[in-house]
Amino acid sequence: MATFLETVVDHTRQLVDERRAALSEADLRARMGAVPRNRPFSEALVSEGISLIAEMKRSSPSKGAIRPDAGVTEIVTAYQDAGASAVSVLTEPKWFGGSLDDLAEARAALELPILRKDFIVDEYQLLEARAYGADAALLIVAALDPENLAHLLRFGFDLGLDLLVEVHDEDEVATAVDAGAEIIGVNNRNLHSLEVDLETSFRLLADVPAGTTVVAESGISHREDVMRLEEAGVDAILVGETLMRYPDPRDGVHMLLG
Image (cartoon, rainbow, N blue to C red; front, side, top):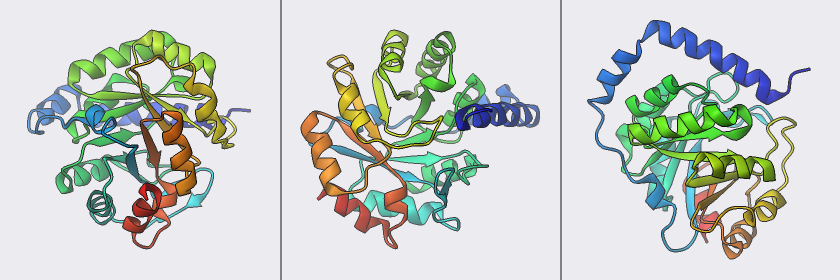
């Protein structure tokens, strides 16, 4: 039986083929020419104190609908106003309720750098990320073989994107480092089983080389979690569900950042 990650990657490849047939890479590159210069995502993560990447997400495979009718501009400007350092926009449609239009809307509304969060398996998706206004994109080690990971890293760098490379265990950290990752995200959620363990971030920190920016993802819901991660040396946190459940997302940002 296929795991969640295997299922979503297979579905994503089908979607990419459909989008490529509707909009060529040449058309995407033409659109990229109209997008302003990238904003410094990597720099936003290493300011004094722990940085927050606040995520726009309407639903998730583990929790179902979170805020299905959420408007992008309303949510992301609330994050910016409250002191987030960057914003993540989930563009996966089937399980997370996102779209590339969400990314473009966020770009128009924000001054903060933006991360495209999706299951990226093809360089076409990195062209999309840049063409729709992302400053950075997510690459998931578990979804890619090492050669493809390294290729997509180089391709993304050449487009001017920062790449957040997501890992979940020691072997994946080594793969990310070998591929040239400069920003490593430790996902406390196992993408095969969808189980969450915040201790994953603390366990894997020792395996990340000095000088690498570290982002903790998933399972962060209390100020105490943030304080522990900051004390351990984590540079940034990526939080979505906790913030999206607040009637006013500003209150969630203030809670996490103290």
